[in-house]
Image 1 (cartoon, rainbow, N blue to C red):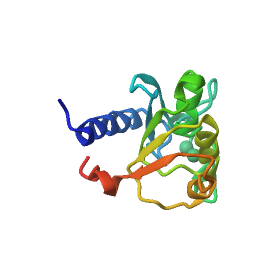
Image 2 (image 1 turned 135 degrees about the vertical axis):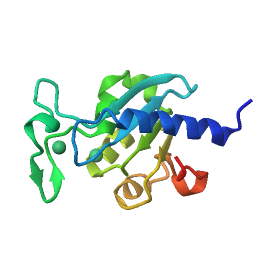
Image 3 (image 1 turned 90 degrees about the horizontal axis):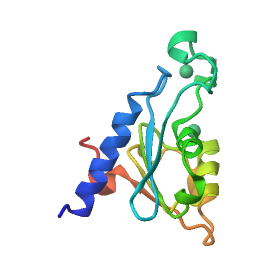
Image 4 (image 1 turned 90 degrees about the vertical axis):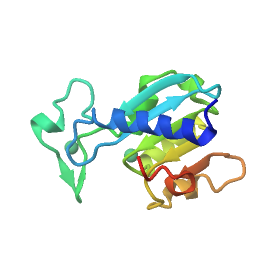
Length: 149
Ligand SMILES: [Zn+2]
Ligand SMILES: [Zn+2]
């Protein structure tokens, strides 16, 4: 039987593989989502909205160094699956720490765990989860030795 950390590392590797599908050259980010029982629910990567040309074809539309053309992987992951099944579930995120908009969506879905390869660069999610009534455990790479992926 796999150690818990080994399982988490393998799931983070799935998120990394998904990130290769991203179509915005500014950022390759991927997420893999499971329900509270560990069954897969969804996945997402950053790319243009449905029906729009992707950044790798049409080019990025940058404002302040950020591409505004691509829908972020976390939002796509949430949109791609059954949201009810995500409640108390887990998001494995590779390639970025959630921005404020994604953090709002993650908190709204009521995930229980967020595993993230990026170091804690933005306090937005921390602020949003600083309330005892919202229990989201944010687990960063350093605590799980996922850096080696
Ligand atoms: Zn882009
Ligand atoms: Zn985002």
